[in-house]
Image 1 (cartoon, helix red, strand yellow):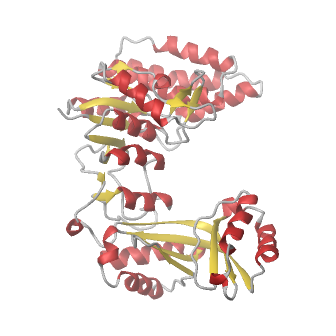
Image 2 (tube, helix red, strand yellow):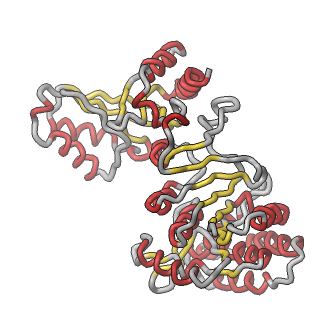
Length: 437
């Protein structure tokens, strides 16, 4: 029989009406054996996520302020969910334990994790599934990094004896039992780890959108949905910020070839987007998606015979490393190389880095281009389709968008262009229209 692991995001479990939708989804397919919940999200635009309230509780305790008023909101949210679901479940007992732990100085990670923990308890009770505390099966090392091997062993041991279970997302524990959390969105990772451990046939990730769109709907009006996308394409698009899925959630399932289906809790009949290992090229569109980010600085370095100088790029990268700066991209020519660096990385170190490059590398010229944006046009089929780059460049030219930088990786799956920040939205619209009209 098939095994499906389902992960539900915060918007999917924000209140009792959403819990009811989740139960309907679970009971509709008996293959949905393992469920990973997030903490309750926003019920409306002015609402506050439970995790944010718990962070605030921790801050209050740290600064000597009573957490009573803030924690009352947390209590009310969970109590309301339990009452409206008509559950015979004493959630107040668990809330009292959490409150006391916070008042006694529990860690920030502990505070943040309790949203998923409490939601998991309620959902397990509501579904009639066994509750498996993530601290027993998601194992972190002392430095806070996930121990994948021990996690897989723990999950296999527990879940092999548990036909149906709810495992809260976002957190685990180190070998000393201290709670450790993933970064925001980490419930996606928990779901992927569970799916890999039980060798699931499918990992469903339920959220409030019906899969991925070809472009940001805040920029392109009614962009087309993406029916299928490969792991590699998703990685390219996620890197540029276009994802409803935590990046680290891809790798556990990709390694064992488990497909991911991004689905909409509010529209369960929608197909959503399937993320798969490979797609028949006949089923591929020329481009799969377009994504981008603003606020980069490009440092362009030129030096005659650069290609013959041993260690030139190593010197550049050493300068970045010494200044604790990571770079986004590094396109190069025979005598030129560009460092594309996010402004959030560069901060106020720009002048220092430029001076160190001048002193260490002795370039013929070095030019700094601030206020740059990057747009990635991604598609598996592009490598075998003639004229894609020409079509893209023509579209940008027709929209009066000046291209300052071009880079295409060896896989030819991604054409990356650097343009001015002010041209970002126009650039994305122009590329989208060129390939969808």
